[in-house]
Amino acid sequence: EPVDHGGREDDAADADPVPTGSIVLGDAALVRCRGAIVEPGVVFDTRGGAIVVDEGAQVRSGARLEGPLYVGPQSVVLGGDLRGSVLGPQCRVRGEVTACVFLGYANKAHDGFVGHSVLGAWVNLGAGTTTSNLKNTYGDVRLDVGGERIETGRQFLGSLIADHAKTAIGSMLGTGTIL
Image (cartoon, rainbow, N blue to C red; front, side):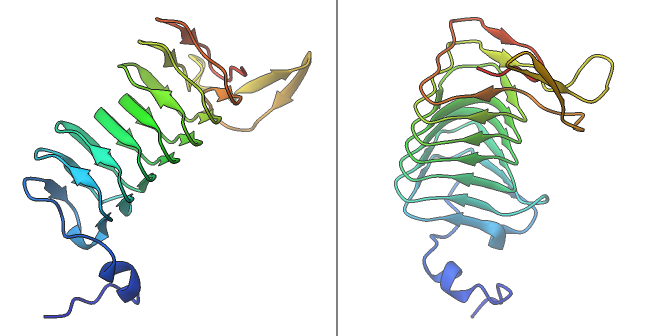
């Protein structure tokens, strides 16, 4: 029987069914796996938005994906909680990731928290790298760019990391860090 996807028939036609052994919290019609490999035990939480896992991507058992979320082609989610983020092509991600953009080929293959951050292409975060995305005063984050302070008007802002930047094992990045 045809399913009404709110005018998204073309999108629904090229999506695989929800992977066997997955757990869906919310509307299963908002899970789109397009030729992806999803191991049993993955949790898809669509209560906040759709989740798209693109062609050739892999999601390992034990991962929790919370929409809105996009996992780009050939990316690998190694485990952990991913929320409200976009992973470009060929990324490797593990740990807790919230409200982030990973441009192509960025890697965070170990545990640690990265939130409200942008990682450029070919970034590599060493094991245990953690960002702070909230000041302990709960005030707005200020950026220091070339000796000039910029008011962001944002309470949550992690790190802005340029292409090809790398962090060492156990790096702790303060709120509003620019690399």
